[in-house]
Image 1 (cartoon, rainbow, N blue to C red):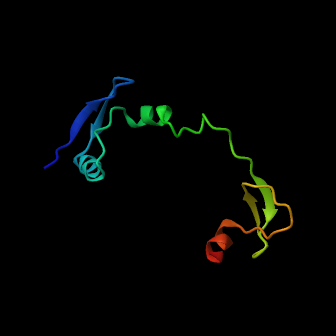
Image 2: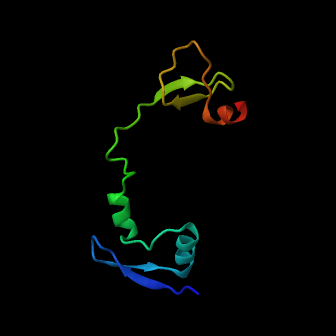
Image 3: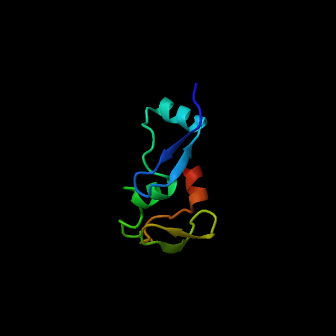
Length: 91
């Protein structure tokens, strides 16, 4: 049903492949064909991390296993703090 095709990126004007498998995936998800190549999508993405300030990370020690870890909040010492591995098992 689908055949590989070539699309011209609307930003850089370079041709890029749009495989039959990608077309099927896009169709199943209800997406339209891409207008930009992968490189241009990455630089023009609304989710680009260049637009947002970097989240400050804090060094601490896991209250469960004792390993050092980094968390996206400043621990106050009033509540236990868990590394990502231990936190998964706490739920």
